Image 1 (cartoon, one colour):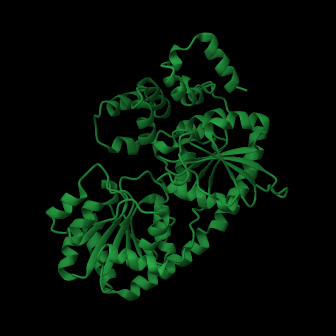
Image 2 (image 1 turned 45 degrees about the vertical axis):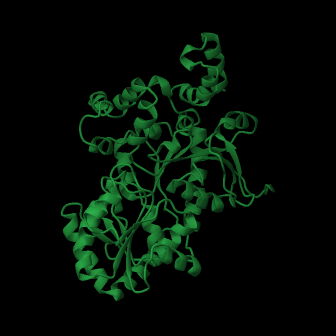
Image 3 (image 1 turned 60 degrees about the vertical axis):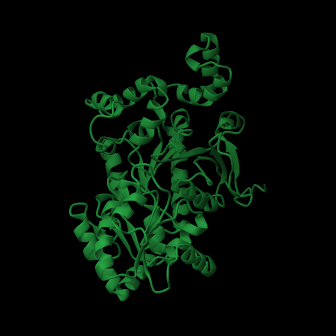
Length: 457
């Protein structure tokens, strides 16, 4: 790969990448394609990610296990950590603490991810310690409730469990004003910067659009409503299907596409059957990136309901707008950055009534659909371009490098397992030791000391 001398900074970026099925992996792919023109960029992925995408020689991909040694040989100016509420980010979490850098907080809520990573591997004590630290004075009690599956699912959405990675970072990047304010309210000494969520402008493929319509037996005169993402209760699927049953009586030309994988939390096919909607609803299963954009292209109205939510800025919502489609979204505080005259916002209270009214209005009024679609595209071009995001990242990198020279993160008050790289050690050695029928806990003390010495270098 030809490394240009005009790129002054050497940056390590930790993120899942395609083909990992994550919106953040697609986001990172698009970001790195632009950012690599400005900086020397190495991407560290999970040691066990089977394949990596091609970025035309612009970047290098390495398994995360190689970072320590490469950084010792040729230190990076700064690290970037793309953090979301999903276990595919588990491999990078330990590095946040051992090598402080820039934390990109895609989801304000990290509770589900940490619970799954710790409790399902038998590390209840570590989960209790993190909850106690992040949410005093009730954190320990709440952790016991969650670990014993007591209380409602809202507990994990209410207690974000993000204080530790924010405190361990030189800077936290977020994608909306509301989350920035929340980060600073809970962490007054943090450096939090809002960066736009860049999305690409994609030209649809007419032949693929035709193929997708034929695949689902959708006629040219039918009107398509579409939701995107895994089928979970948080997507408002129950409300949409109930409203669809009413809408269909007046507008028989309406079809509904759910573009995503079936979730495990409810049987979408059985629900459609009970409501008499089986012939009107299609669930696509997992689709490729190219298919995803073309499914948006064949749709007439996008529905992007989310509640409860991790308070993320929805890239899917912006991608729908970028394809010049009108979109309905949940009316939530962290989406206040989206103008009310461009996105139709559906209140969580009395959701079905508002959804019915808004859908009916859009179905009857093609001029309104066109107007909202055009305004949405204009908004994305102005506020969420990939080029704009890349330039904002570059400014953050420069600021982060200055902070790195000034700030020393004190980890001594963190829970024990997050000090001195112990989390990194456990993660990196876990599978190696398993092959030897050993665990880190049972290693001889002199071997532990030697390992910790290496990871503190």
